[in-house]
Amino acid sequence: MNIYQCIAALTDNCVKHKLIGDEDRIYCVNRLAAILKIDDPNICRYNENLSIPQILDLIIEYAVNNKIIEDLFDEKEILSANIMNIFVSKPSEINDKFYSLYKIGSKTATDYFYNLSQYSNYIQTQRIAKNISYKVNTEYGDLDITINLSKPEKNPKDIAAAKNISQTNYPKCLLCIENEGYEGRINHPARANLRTIRLSLDDERWYFQYSPYAYYNEHCIILSSEHRDMKIDRKAFSRLIEFVEAFPHYFLGSNADLPIVGGSILTHDHYQGGKYEFAMAKAQSEYDFNIPDYDNIKCSIVKWPMSVIRLCSDDKTKILDTADHILNKWRKYSDESVDIIAFSGDIPHNTITPIARIRDGKYELDLILRNNRQTKEHPLGIFHPHEDVQHIKKENIGLIEAMGLAVLPGRLVNELHEVEKYIAGEKNNVAQYHKKWADQLKNNFSGDKNEIEQYVRNAVGNKFLRVLEDAGVFKRDEKGQLAFKRFISSL
Image 1 (cartoon, rainbow, N blue to C red):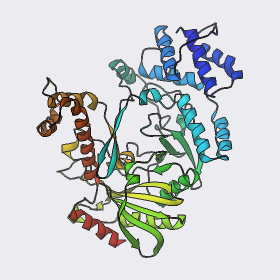
Image 2 (cartoon, helix red, strand yellow; image 1 turned 90 degrees about the vertical axis):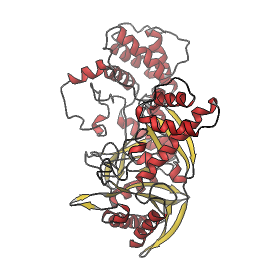
Image 3 (cartoon, rainbow, N blue to C red; image 1 turned 180 degrees about the vertical axis):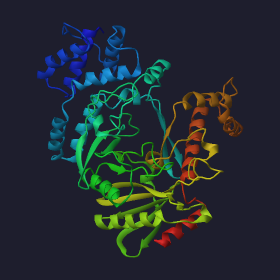
Image 4 (cartoon, helix red, strand yellow; image 1 turned 45 degrees about the vertical axis):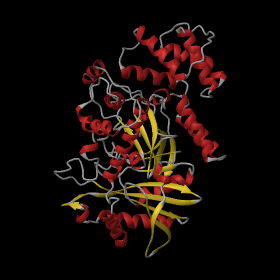
């Protein structure tokens, strides 16, 4: 396809997917031609059936070859987002459309916004498709494993360019609302095609958007209008419940608010949700209990490798009261027999990872108990992946992992292939940090060669299960479960 066909193809696709109307076609062609420094767009026909991301790749290639931009990752991202921004309505228009559809139904509204976010190429569907994803059956249900290949690696030329860019504090972080429509720069992602939906939660302004690199279906992010630290408290529980009331087909959860047990960004208050049922949500209750003075609340310990209390009620105020009571107790709770200490001086260690949903018309709130204490034996955290599993997963166990979805580094694709070759007795280059594990796998393998890939995948899943067990504050053995029930008694 030549550049004129690309322009026609992109415009037609945007009409087809209702990003623009047919009457917008000439305007958009002219704006696109201006960006590409083409004097006569020469609207023509095309025959190829390409997706929007595929057409964008061809246009970006043209721009690099014709010296419109340099062959740098960030410059290509900026141009791509600027091109799609031509076809995306202003935030006010999108919000008006969203809330007019919301009157029909909340799912109708989110379907519209999700499709818009995909067709505008804000959600990177073509890159997400590169991820390797599968399930591994365990006693706790099917854990999700994803090897993340969606974020392209930068080459030395990109890294060198970033060093020469002057620093700015705008936007303050990747989650600030000032990213909406922001062109981007070297070392700050392009957001010209980002749009958000305005929300009111707990009488505050919040913003609803989708994750550009979604790890599960309709992976959304809810952002505070204020750049402030993450905080788990009654107001956070209330916002989670208020959101799932408004969008009962979604869950919403929060990373914990302390380092090690929190997510990657603790400096901007935000939540994550979506239309997906994780293994933890499917996990059954295995020990029911009541808390005096908190009636009409079904309380239970969930059968899960991490330590989860599930609350269920049709009374919003009472479930919030109960969750707040548990949080306040847990913040101050210590049990040195299982290494749980609430404070080191004035430094707090206990917090909660909460997840809200509506199930069978009732409010359901899962509270994952967390502790971020470190020791010489476990310098990255006692309740963090221990050293013998860090060759697979070393990063923090945030909300997504805690619910049963492993997000693993892209390096594992090649590394696991070398492990497979080692098990098969073929020439290999197994990384030293995988060697002990690879020896164990080889010694225990008894199948034929065509079963090795699945064997290694299952082994990775079992490693992730160990990661979750390490992160559990009350272990699944008799000692740990008795300690868990002592905490329940303290409530």
